[in-house]
Image (cartoon, rainbow, N blue to C red):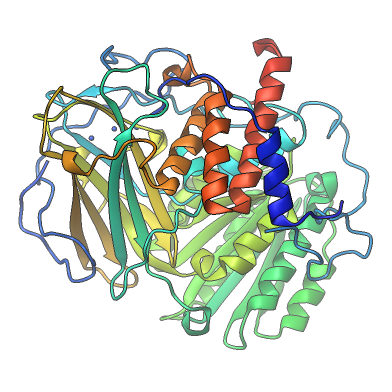
Amino acid sequence: MKTQHPMNRIAIAMACIGAITLAACSGYSGGQASVAKETTSDFDNGTGGIAPANPSAGIFFNGQDPSRPPVNFNQDVRGRFEQVYGDPENARPDGRPDEPPGPGVESGEPYDMFFKQHGVNPFVDTEDDRLSTFAADVDTGSYTVCRDYLNRGNLPPNEAPRTEEFVNYFNYRYAPPANSTFSMAMDCAPSRYGADLKNCHLLRVGLQGKVVDAAVRKPAVLTFVIDISGSMQMENRMGYVKQALRMLVKQLRRDDYVGIAVYGTRGAKLLDHTNDPSRVLEALDSLAANGSTNAEEGIRIGYDMAAANFKQGSINRVILCTDGVANNGEVVPEALLKMIETQRRKGITLSAIGFGMSNYNDTMLETLGDKGDGHYAYIDNMDEAKRVFVDNLTGTLQVIARDVKMQVEFNPAVVKSWRLIGYENRDVADKDFRNNAVDGGEVGAGHSVTALFEIKLFENANGALATTTVRWKHDEQEEYSEARQEAFTKDIRTWEQAPANLRLAASVAEFAELLRHSYWAKNGSFDPVLADLKQVIALTDDNEVLDLTKLVAKARELSTNKSASGLAGGK
């Protein structure tokens, strides 16, 4: 398919996208302040205050059906990448080789898909709990998995969308810090999608990590752990893995080293660590999918290799490429997770990269990425592989902050109730905000984290809305830093005056809430999302937003054509 000029694509999309009606509310969870600060020198615009050392416990109600009211809820409440490195000569324009799909693929709904239901956050009365505490999350796998569903003509199962991963997929172009680890921004506007709730506003917290130039990033010691079991033959998953890793290898320097472990029926070392890219490419070319799946043995061998080649002061990372399915050995045994946690404390991190639709385990890959102090991404096409392994390679590899936690304190004199949108499985007990034994999230170079809250205000109230405190550990150091940012009622803008990137984040969150059939989006529709995205496209000329708009239009069409019983199912 020939790629159109971006402006032509935008004009066509804007002409085709309709806008009607208003949607319902979508949403998030809450914080308090004043203890001595440990350090703030690593923060551009922190103002010195801190969340309390002994705050009350937060309120989260997870593991519920998101389409039902939360327990005790308050009723108030790129253009195409022309030719990929090593692409087959007959590759299609989207990067997929011209090979017939596996059985049941692209001719029906995906099967044997494994997701976990995390429930939906409720509205919380500020007088009962003013604190929202959670770990930072830079995963994007949920968004690209759901994108793959839609591009194949299917709605994703309700449990597949994780709203925060949809939101954090997009670049909001926050101002980067000049001489520190993070910069932060907070802004607020009346909620476009909470228009049926009185005094409902959308509060955004944006955290931007420092940018590290590729030329000065740390040397890398990478260990590829590659699933070569029979399931990797489906849809040429192995071909995708080879192409994606070729792209990564092409970006490496002479002071970077790569080793390879594989697993099918048994795990094995394929290539000792080397800085010779030709040897790495030759090893990748030799891979063939066959046999059952002993993921446990393969991952252990990969970590043993990474530990044996560990270099202090370098990036030491395991990159796991798999569909997440294991039928030999335990899938994710506790002992394996503990080993991964032990290794991360020694400085070996894990990136879990997923491939394939049908016979795919999203739950396993998200868990491994979380436990390994890394992240989880899903590759649905070669453009996405380029995004992860070329455009954002330094951010993918180099961590700038570990155990990143965020705590938001709402002012009970101004904010009546609040809801955190997403992050249901990133909950941290308020009392554990400063507990260094409790894991937070990891943020890579140049990565950003966005959290959205729906808040209901008291009428005619003025003053501080909320204070956000961020706590993180410096990479390769034991010291922690904290800094904070405040938002005030005087800073609230009308929806029309709100920054385009705030409106984009709101639309992305509502899209995810609609796909997951969130209780808070039960009266919503895709039409106002399309209307807002059309305006954002005009303001930003962003191809990612254009592609998002097409996905929303597909979801609207599929929702219209399918009854609830026809939705794609997962396990």
